[in-house]
Figure (cartoon, chains in turn brown, purple):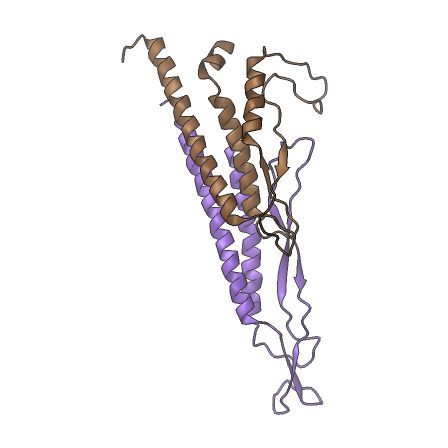
Length: 135
Length: 138
């Protein structure tokens, strides 16, 4: 399946990262009223670079003899989850800033759709090639 | 890790905000409940939220919902009011009114309803993205 994986490019990884980031941002929005909650996010650029480096390397996989072993499938490593630095402090120790989380969330959702579109056209292209341009 | 996780997380927020709205409704409803002693008087209730920590070994660092940790009674003492003609008055002629600030409760309610809306919006976006993902390649 390596051929198809390569043909799809980086988009699947982007989608996976975007999904993970969306979950984090949703958690931030859900915890907007939780005392002492610290807003979390990932550095998308860094995570993406790591994913690309992983993809550039030859894929390999490790054998897992116990289900608590970490997976080594040559796929994406988990990006580092970091804490956001708030521009204003809330007396209850919460660092979620709704406007910021919302703009990040929207931005993330839009970019997810962009990657989706790209992946979609790639799939359509492959399909077209498979059919030899026939309908 | 999937788009459904986002919906689950937003779902926990809906739950928590509903509890909050319910306590506010209860506080508002009992704002004028009179009692015959300070102990019996209604006291304002408020939920305390806490983040749900994931299982660090199996989770991928993104599952983190919210839950209602406990419901506390806020500390303010009931007001004593001298009203000997009142049927509930104690032997000294006092009745007790809960110290509920309806303005604070209203502000709290607005915040809760905003948070509720936010969670629903996130859920909707996640739904749309999931639907679009399902039509991939069609």
